[in-house]
Image (tube, rainbow, N blue to C red; front, side):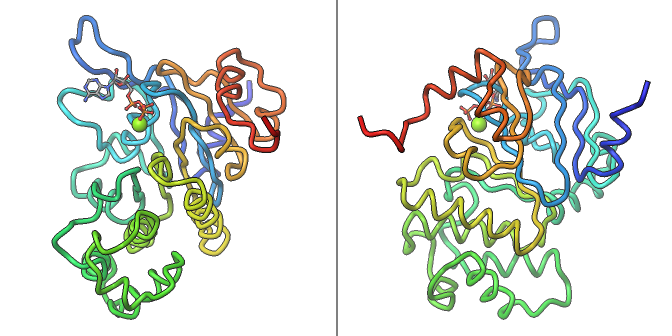
Length: 273
Ligand SMILES: Nc1ncnc2c1ncn2[C@@H]1O[C@H](COP(=O)(O)OP(=O)(O)OP(=O)(O)O)[C@@H](O)[C@H]1O
Ligand SMILES: [Mg+2]
């Protein structure tokens, strides 16, 4: 039989095979992620969708081995990122992967932005650490402009609390981009924002993919967001992927009961009540 696994590994930026992550006791573990397969090709925006507790964040954090140990344990599977076997990397190699190849943004800017430093200093620090030889000040200004902050110089000199929620989220994306990552993992990046700002941030992610060839793993519980942004989607329930495919196909002709349930939960914006 043709080995599809190998074919995907050769072309994919990321290939996750049979990933399982357990919490709690060894004899009776919580199977937070239970034999999950997914992949991302270069330049793709791939969504991981599912209800709260389905295992989205734990799957995503596993990619750079960021799950809280020893409570959480990757017990099985392979994670191949740019040809590297992530689960076999030494700690020095892992640091490089975390700092420079895979970047994360989360729902709460407070988890990434430090309140006591200016936005510009924090972004500069990431550049100083990971990109030796790059002119820091100019690169900070470039990044802040790239994420659509109207006055990059002002934003650079501001402390996080001096910016609005949407601007903080943009600053956080700039910080994630500061290391020039190949994969951006965006875990519920817009959940805390109002609908208009949410749309602007999602548009920004799409633009970054187009302009930089960035690959994005977008995590959300909202299939409405997926419809507008993602090329492909994986639907996750109870630690397992229950359905996957091109976004249009999955949304138009969902095969799994759980996907249909998620679709019903999406507000019908195009219909008047
Ligand atoms: N620190 C932890 N200790 C014990 N169990 C955990 C821990 N973190 C996660 N889990 C388990 O892993 C499961 C999946 O968690 P995960 O954070 O991946 O869910 P999620 O899909 O991201 O949910 P949400 O949409 O609420 O962010 C949880 O239901 C829980 O049982
Ligand atoms: Mg989560």
